[in-house]
Length: 119
Image (cartoon, rainbow, N blue to C red; front, side, top):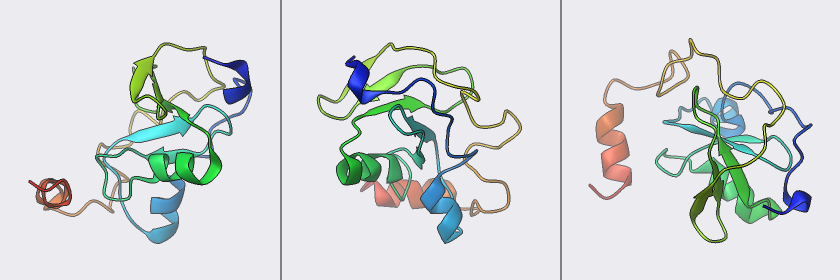
């Protein structure tokens, strides 16, 4: 991984997807930009805000923002990689549900995700 594509000292933007939170929405899993700390939802989420962040900023490296996961994803080649430790916290809070956030996830969330994925 190129050092100019990540900054291990930058903290995450918050405990959840920036855009979903602003819109009152919900997410399935979270990803954290390795360059600027932006937290967005994964491509299995309805908003797909992590990949939108890459397209808007050119920041291709995201790290999983899920507890117990530390893999990186490079949108340029659609490959997973190992990488350096990023600034804490390294995941959303352990007590935050998946999907999340608490209180925003519809009862039929599985059907919504399936329909969005063409299932």
